[in-house]
Amino acid sequence: MKEKHGGDFGIGAPNDAFSKYFVGNSYLNVLTDTDKTNLLVCNVTFEPKCRNNWHIHHATKDGGQILICIDGEGWYQEEGKNPQSLKKGDVVCIPANVKHWHGAKKDSWFSHLTIEVPGEKTSTEWCEVVSDEEYNRL
Image 1: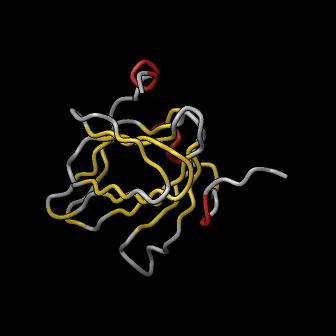
Image 2: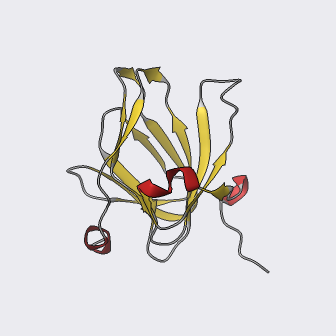
Image 3: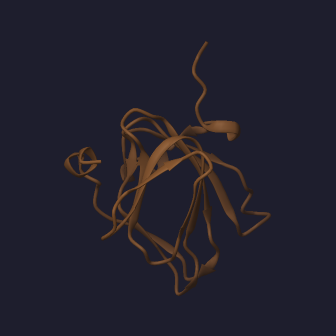
C-alpha cells in the first residue's frame, strides 16, 4: 500500500508554478475558489528536506499569512529568530512584511494549510534560498 501524504486535504499536484522558489519537491492543493471569495486557502505538502526560499508577504495594510499544520513535521523561521519546530495542530500567524521560510524536516513529509490574509497592496517577494548549510544546522 502506497503511503498517503497531504493529510485529510490530499497532496494535490506537483507545485510546478512555484518550483523555482523551493529546494526539493512540493505539492499544491488549492482549496478555495478565488472567483467566489477573496480568501486563498491551499494545502502545501513538502517532501522530506523540502523548503521554500526566504520570502516576504508585503502589504500596506493587514495581509500576511497563516499556517495550520496538518500532517508530518516541519520548520518555520523568521529572519533574526530561532527556527520553530512544527507538528500537526500548530498554527503560525505571520504578520505582513516579515521575512521567513518554512518546510519539512529532514526525515518527515510535512503539510500545512496556508491562508493568505487579505490586505491592501499585497504581493510576495521571493528572496534567497535557504542553503543546505543553513538547513543542515537544524
